[in-house]
Length: 373
Ligand SMILES: *Cc1c(COP(=O)(O)O)cnc(C)c1O
Figure 1 (spheres, protein in one colour):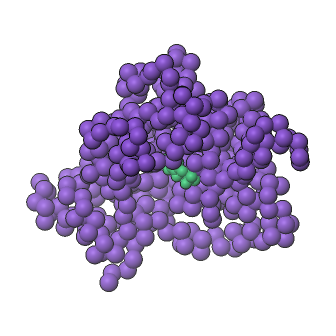
Figure 2 (cartoon, rainbow, N blue to C red):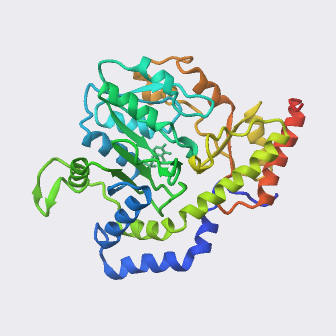
Figure 3 (cartoon, helix red, strand yellow):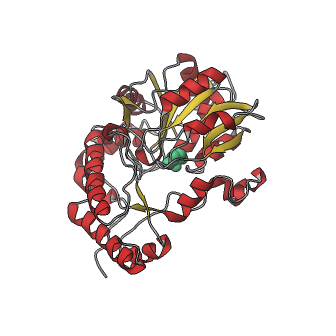
C-alpha cells in the first residue's frame, strides 16, 4: 500500500507547533479559567483586529455563529433567507433553527452565489442574504450588500471557509452586518474541537450577541433576554490565539500549493478552479471538475490518497429539506457540479512531491477514460 496522503494533515501541523500549543493549553489548565475569561477576551480582540471589525464574539461553532447572527438581526418565523444552493448545510440549518426558511440561488463557475440571480429570487418575505465565501474564495459581497441596502435586507457573511481572504486588502467577514466564522479543526483556522466567532461593526448587534451567547445575562443571574449557552471555550481560544499568528503564512502556503496544482492540472487539459484574485482566495479547498468522478475517487482510494466532495448532495435534495419540495433540476449548475466535483488534498504543509502524486493519479484516470486531448 502506498503511503497515506491525508486530505488535511492536522497531525503534521500539531507536530510543527507542539511546544507553543501545549504551553497555551497548560496555561488554561493552570489558570482554571475554562469558561470566558482572559484567553477568550484576548482571542476576540486579536481576531477582530485581524479581520478588521470592531467587535468579535467567540461562540461554540460556525453553525451557532450563523444562528445567533440571524437572531441578533431579528430574522425569525416567516422570514426568508437567500443563500447559495451550493454550500454546507449549516447555512440552511441555522436558518431553520430560527424559524426562517432558506431560499437558494444557483452558483456560477466559481461555485459562488450568482449575484445576477439574487433580485429575481427576492419575495416580500425575504429578510436577509447569506453569501458564502466558499472554498476560501471571496464572494462579491460588496455587490450583494448594495443589493441588500436597496431592498432593506440584512447581510450575513458566512466566512467559515475563508479566514483571511480579502477583497482589496480588506478581510471578508467585515463587509456585511455580521460575519460568521467556524473554527472546526479542518478549517484554515481550526481549533481542537468545535468553535466559531461572529464579527460586526455594529455595537448594538454585538451587545445582543454577547448577551445571547451567555444565557442572556449581563452579569451573573441578571438575565435581560432568553439566551442560550453557546460560548467559545477557553482552551479553544488559547489554541486559536497560537494558530492565528501563523494563519497568513499558512494561507500563503495554500496559495502556492494551488498554483502548483493549477499548472499540473492545466497540462492535463483540466480547468483549474476559477480564481478572481490572489488575495481573495485562501484555498480552504481545491476543487476541480472531472469526467467519471466516482471512478477517479476509486483510483485515489487505491493510491491511498484522501479526497473529498464538497458537496455530494445539494441541500434542496437532502431528505431533511424535502418539505421545501424543490425537485431535481431546480438548481442545475449546483446539481451538475455535485456530480462532477472533487476536492484534492489541500493543507499548508502539502509538498510539491505530494501534489505531483495527486496529479499523476488524475493523469492515469484521464488516459483511461479517454478524455485526454
Ligand atoms: C464548516 C462550515 C459551517 C459550520 O461550521 P461548524 O463549526 O462545523 O458548525 C458553516 N458554513 C460553512 C460554509 C462551513 O464550511
